Length: 474
Image 1 (cartoon, rainbow, N blue to C red):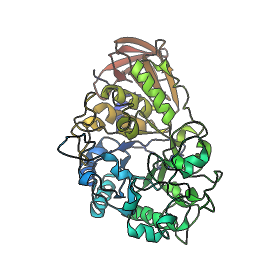
Image 2 (cartoon, one colour):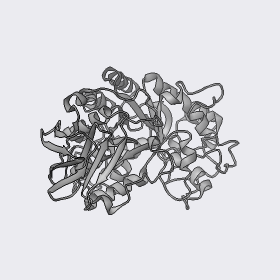
Image 3 (cartoon, one colour):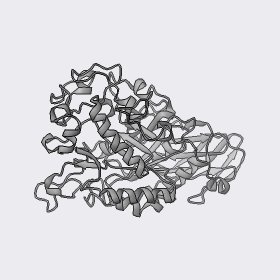
Image 4 (tube, rainbow, N blue to C red):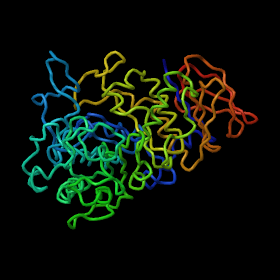
């Protein structure tokens, strides 16, 4: 099932060569031209070795997995996810179990390798986002280093008073922001000594060349309006993390508006998205869920895609078809074919707002074998270099400043994203070939796409042509 992407503009070749990306990388910029490649579980060396490919594919940012010192699980095995009896042990999620805030871990590489990766990114004009997770420690909290314990005033000062109590109700803000999530003890992120130690790590990352951060489990770190843990005087972590205030004389090394900072604030009842959005960009998790429903059904109307399912401004959102959590945890999205994922990404990247993230699935993965080659450190599959992905990334930049209009066929199978009068993406998410006639904003003419040299005609405000199953055109 091939997905074809066609990019047409009033001067298609000229537009495809235009490099007019947004100068401001912030997620709240007026227009969002940037796109993120999530190089999930790639080592620092692997990312560096593929930086030219990443740049050539049109990605503005590459997001790494956590770079911090982490718990060494299963004797340091390098499997993404081992099963009983496997010869190679390991789990990908150990890098989400910090034991110290220094650069480097056994899964992805050391500090020198990290710095070399950042240098490679700078050479090719790609910015680095690092996944950070100050909210918790390893499940085995006794593995925390003596240096971290000492820095925060002792092991007992590292955690909230409620930090060893399991969260029962994730919509209870006190439990959510002070309790133990999934067995991970909850750090007292309001302890000034912890903040000082953690911000040294953040500033070291910036010094190495990092220009963005994804805050894992961000909704589990309290906002000023949230209830206080008994060991906290102020819920001021976000003010410190985003440079609004210093801690013990130490401040974020760069202005927050010159960094791309966003938080994993998964949506649910009683989640304060609007207050979080005052500090950073946010993940559009509900929209991703709705988009996956539409892709599975091959019908735009299978769920509500007309609005973003989020109170924050669209320009503040990081959008995705899937994330590493939806793929790797309960495999919520792992059954969806690569082609359908690709179509969903084309839809998101063709749009005016949101900052789309493309998740790199494991190399060799199939819908029967989600782990593929099953090695941490290896490059993911080739989908991030697929011609349709490359084309839409370049289309997005070429359409800088152009407003969007989403037009959908009556049967919901064909979606058009029109960008002013300069270009449009037409995506068939259905399993059947379609003869389409859709409203068009572009001038009358015959247009040829930049991937497959297929032609479409615009006349009297209509675009006509034939679209193949699971394919995209413009």
